[in-house]
Length: 281
Length: 294
Image (cartoon, each protein chain N blue to C red):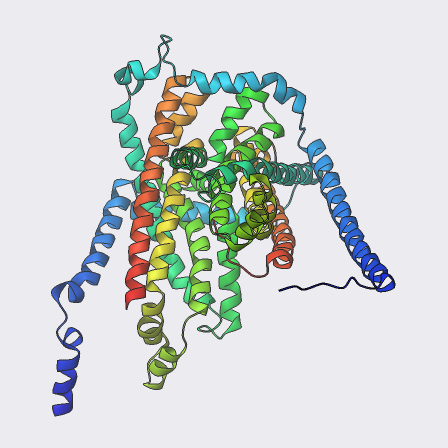
C-alpha cells in the first residue's frame, strides 16, 4: 500500500492524467471519423451505389480473366508501346537530372549564400513541382504536337522541380570538411563545387535519380491518356471500349516492366550507396 | 623543425607510378564503357520516343509565348490589371477546389485505415505465417504499382462519373503506398513490449494494440500527412478522366485555349498545395518532436 502511494507521488501524471491526455485521443479519432463520414456523404457515397458498383466491378474483373491481347499483332503493338513508355521515362528522368544539377546548386544555401536567390529558386522549383506531369504533358502537346516527345518533355519538366529540390537538400546536408580542405589549398569557387561538394553528394543524387526512373515509368504509363505517347493511350482506349481481356494483358505487362526496372535500379542503387532511405512517392 | 623527405629510389618509384597509372587507366576504361552504354540506351530510347531536338528548337517559341499568353486576358491586358476579370469563376473554382481537397482527404483517410489493418499482417516480425504475409504483400504491391488514374478509369465505368471513383482510386493507391511504409516501420520496432504483452496472455490483437501501436503511431501519422499532400496533387487531375474535382475544368480550359483561366486555376492549385505542404510539414515536425521528448 505504501509502495503504491510512493509510486503515485513519483508519477502523478500517470495516475491522474489531465483531461487533455485522457480524452484527447478519442476526441481526435471521433473528429476524424465524423469528418470522414460527412465527406463520404457529401461526395455522393451511398450504400446502394457502392453495392451496385462492386457488382459491376466484380463482373469486370471476371471478364479480365484470362488476360488476352486478342492476337499476336495486337500483343506486339502493346509491347512496342510499353517500350516507348520506358524510353519516355528513361529520357525524361536522366535529362531532368542533368538540367536540375545547376538548379540544385543554385538553390543550396551553402553554395549560393544569398537569401533572395535561395527563396526565388526554391519557390520556383516548388511551383514547377506543384503542376502535375499530366498538365505539363498537355502544355507540351501544344508546343511539339501529339506523341511521345511531348511525354519526354513533360516528365523532364516536372522532374526538374523534384530533382532541383532533392539535390539542393542533399547538397545542404553535405559534409563541410572537404570544402574547407579544398578552400585551404587556394581553390576557386568552381573547384570548391567540383572537388569539395560533388564527390560527396553525387552517389546520393544518382540513387535518387535511379529511384525516380522507376516511379516515372509508372507516371509515363498514364500520360498517354492525354495523347503524350506510350501505353496509356491503348490502356484508356481498351478500358473505354470495355475490352477487359486486353486491359488485363496491358496492366500485367506494365507490372512486369515496373518490377524489372525496380529490380535493376534497386541493385544499382545498392551498389552505389548501400541501403539508404529514399523518399517514396 | 627541419624535416627533409628523402625521395624514393627510382626503381621503387617507377613501380608505384606504373601501378597508379594502371589504376587510373582501369577506372577511365570503366567510365568510358559506362558512358558508352548510357549513350547507346539514350540513342535507342530517343528513336523509340521520337525525340527531335529540331522540332523543339523550332517550336520552343510556342512554349514561351504559351506561358506568357497564360497571363493575359482575352482583351489583351495583363491579368493583374483586372483581377476580378481574371478570377471571374472564383466561386465555382473554389467549390471545385474544396471538392478536390475533400476527395484527397477522404481518399487518404480510407487508404490509411486500409494500410493500417494490412500492415501488421505484412510485417515479418508480427505475422509469422508466410501464407498470410505473402498474399498481403503482393496485394499492397499491386495497389501501389497500378497508377491512380488507371484505377480511376476503371472505377468510372463501375461506379459512374463523379467524385466516388476518384476517392476509391486514391484510397486504393494510398493503401498500397502507406501499407508498405507502415510495415517497414513496424518491422523496426522494439520487440520487448511485444514479448511482455504475449507473456501476460494477450491475444494477437491486444499485442498489436498495446505493444506495437504506441511505438509506430507517430511515424504512421507523419507518413499519412505526407501522403495527403501528394494526394491533393493527384486529386487535382482526377477530373481528367471524369473522377471529380477541379481537373475537369482545368482540362477544358487547356483544351479550349482559355488562357487566363488556365493560369487562374493552376495558381489556385499551386497555392493550395504549397499551403498544405507547409501546414503538414509543421504538423509532422511537431508530432515527431513530441515523440522524441517522451
